[in-house]
Length: 54
Image (tube, rainbow, N blue to C red):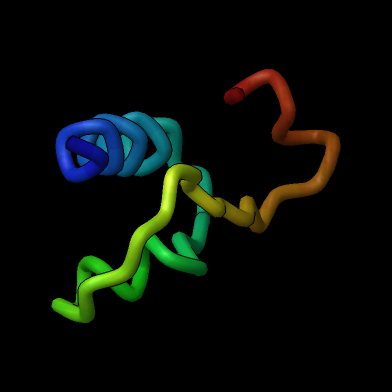
């Protein structure tokens, strides 16, 4: 379920040239460890000058 959404987010951030990191439960799931989670944690590595790209 979250895998398709994560892919869409990753493609959009990559296309915008924005550095990001997915962490937390969803990152653990991507590495194959089962974990019950209902959120996506994303950290953007941008300053306010890049906010229009969002």
